[in-house]
Length: 457
Picture 1 (cartoon, one colour):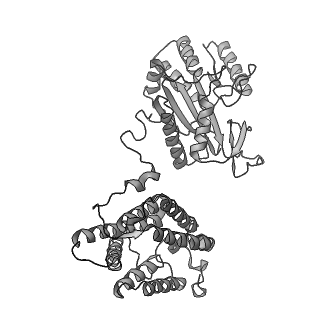
Picture 2 (picture 1 turned 30 degrees about the vertical axis):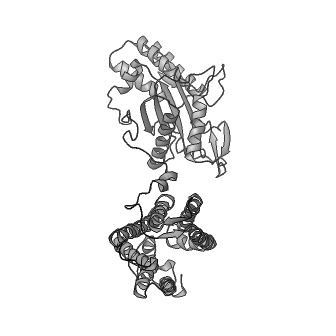
Picture 3 (picture 1 turned 135 degrees about the vertical axis):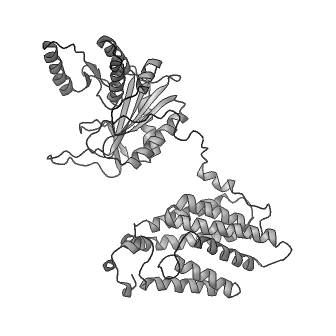
């Protein structure tokens, strides 16, 4: 019998073992206490958590080979003695037919969670997944005189366990971050698994388990099994052949097709434009968010602010008094792609990248034909719009940002680059959307009764 170290479990399984022996069965009991987030009480020991799964697999694989019970027991105990687990959760679980426990504040997490809805060890403010994983790993890897932790050279198997309430997407993101941070800490990860193994019903949290490996335990972990819940173990890392580039440095790696990519703009001009756009966006964000909450998923204002904040960061990194216009557009496109994301981020990135490419090509093919910056930009904007049309069916009248972009680019081209007239055309396009019915985007899925088009919603 493999028993998690809880008083009730030990007593009831102990009773079962006594009854089994009395009936003539040969029975041994292995107790697993792998929770290193709580101080070890010599009287009761540590709680049993997800590490018990490793013990089940090792013992089961050895027993399936026909090993004697005493050998299986010894190897199971060896495995149990070199396991460490720590858990964290946003809240406790929901127990059917039982009054809900007072929930954790929405901005807190609890470390040292068990699987029986008992309180954790410590609470802290909710941080990013990176910080949360780092805190759990600090607990797991801390030197403790009364519990196992991996030495620098000891290989380990890792389990990231869903406490029951996380989606597959969430546990996958967490698992990838755990693997990344263990690699940064120079922990030798031989096997890695993640999924839902030992839950606290629908507990919105996860645990990390480390198992010290030797050749025997590793071979038993790898032994084939028909158990439907046993996952495919990862042995090569998440992305062994992928080089990950820090997005903060992406702008520095932007490459243009020419070392002299057309006209330049003054740094102060760029900063003034970004500052003015930032001010108006921050002012308008609450109303944008309100409208998008009605018509979409409520993140439009936040997405725009993320883009603006990225542009402000970019402006602070400009280290020359002037910059090639094409190069500037390339860097703005990177900001749209990495800071904004979503549909709007992709639209901005495609359009601005296409404009940058057009600026480079215009310069390469027309170096002997001097043109004004406005004329060059007009041609590039038109090319950017043509490229954008290849990837979206949105056009004027669909109640999207194209109702503003298309009039601006078209008018700018048709009026000899008169910015004021083009800007006015864009404003009129924006005003027209107030009485349009959405034909594309999330707003097109919302019932018409949600909006009063004649009132300008």
